[in-house]
Image (cartoon, rainbow, N blue to C red; front, top):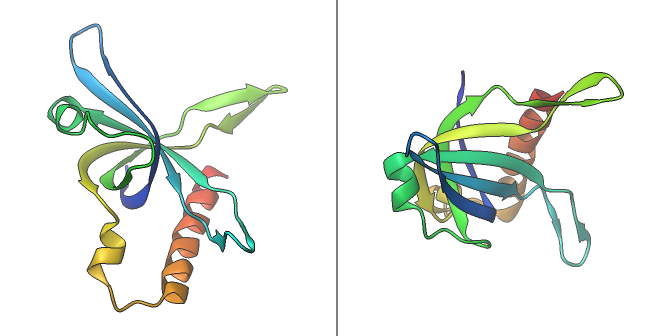
Length: 132
């Protein structure tokens, strides 16, 4: 499987325990794909993130609206059937590091907004192609 580093906004963060007693934090992450308030936003890309045990415990306070950067391993996406055809359900990531904030913005403060949007668009295009 492939490793990935993504930054987005938490839309859901739910902690639960497996029957074996292991804690898992399930995070729904929305990735910005461009646009503006004036021109209208483009559709977001959704990523399901799972953080296990110590990482789940240390990030248990995450809430909707928090901006985070996740480094982790891409999992094979689950599928759903529609009219007898299997479709990928979306990108899933098992996290091994979560940091608060957008590390991409912090690492290159001199980058222009236009360059940043091109970088994000390129990453989103790759994610979208992965799902096809």
